[in-house]
Image 1 (spheres, rainbow, N blue to C red):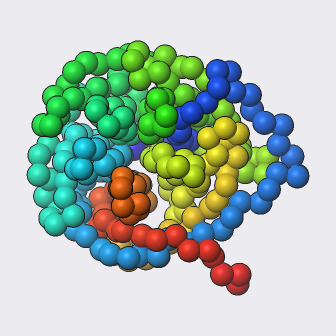
Image 2 (cartoon, rainbow, N blue to C red):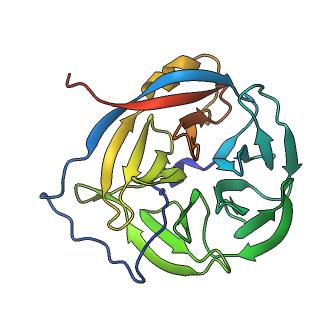
Length: 266
């Protein structure tokens, strides 16, 4: 998403499964140090270098992407960079994307509108209003998790998008901001950090950062081929059934399948 420099203190991310009224943990020095992981490239696939990637999501066996600026919802493949299908959304700035297996849910940045899509070729089923910004979105155990540029993750009811609960994301007691695209997995919520070369893995229940994933190998792989201030790491998708993990970035010419390995001590 294109944001002014004064908003660099914004952030966050997403998950599901939360009891009603989660409280921010009183984390202190005793909070566990996050695991340090490294994203290693397994395969490189073509990606549209004009796509301002805001959301990346597997849905019903297909890979979808939400793009900002002159935004759209699009179906993409690993075989070619050009989208297989797309629906333009010229009057809004699309953001995060999530799937419950039946529907796709697409956030907007400052338009306070959630688009709900349905069908093999997605058609807008409805639009739902909400308050605040939309950055990242993912689906976890019956709830949509939204980041909005703060250190708070909000858990929404998919039926009407009302907020059911919330949690603050912290690393050793320090609130984590600027979280962007989200992906809900069994072991935690994965979140891009805007204008950073790492991804966070976050605990659903406490908001505690479980791991910091160094993705600088991917950034080096596109260096010089993805110019511009906003051509940053953004886009996480976990393929159901196979467990394959994919990362990309805004205006990146490549989409990467990655594996996560423990970081070696310098």
